[in-house]
Length: 265
Image (cartoon, rainbow, N blue to C red; front, side):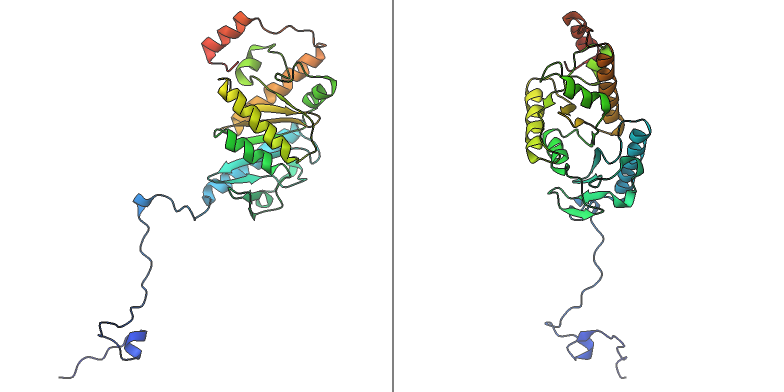
């Protein structure tokens, strides 16, 4: 009885090497990934998380524009997604962002997708390196805060006095960063230094004020960052509208806010 014919089209069968111990083995399909191995570090940001972050940046930009916190192409927003970050493009109008045009950069700042990243990319990166809670970062040219830097802040280490309890609880200390041109890398160094100094003192910060340019705020999500920005701008407005006359809260009131609510003052 003759052997059944082998209809395989593999290389080993065609060249007569089938059955030999040294016959080449054609590669099969790749094995299923091992769930226990965790996420593939080379796979890049999760697409679902990227889409959500893009939508959030567009939403926040539109909200800031509609409420007068930003104008024209002033300001920028970024969000961390895994080891990468999304940031608004350079000279983008925050009120009219398009999600597909947001710049995606890797941990080293290399552009992966979208339009050219904002000139303040290095600043956003240094804030995240200095404060791991800084998932969402917002920079605006808010009118009253820029005006405050033009007419004089309360102190270089505290741009505004603690005149309301919610300023103490929601904002805390805000140092002034001396003027440098937009995008100057020295600004990133100065901000990182202020973050480290305040953290070492046990009073971590979540905002700085750039002289003649406006506030930079950050937080674990968009809501937290915006809460800081809004309270900071409204307190500057109050202080300027009242002619800088209100006295700071007394030390007893500050101590009560620290003990009752954990205010970092």
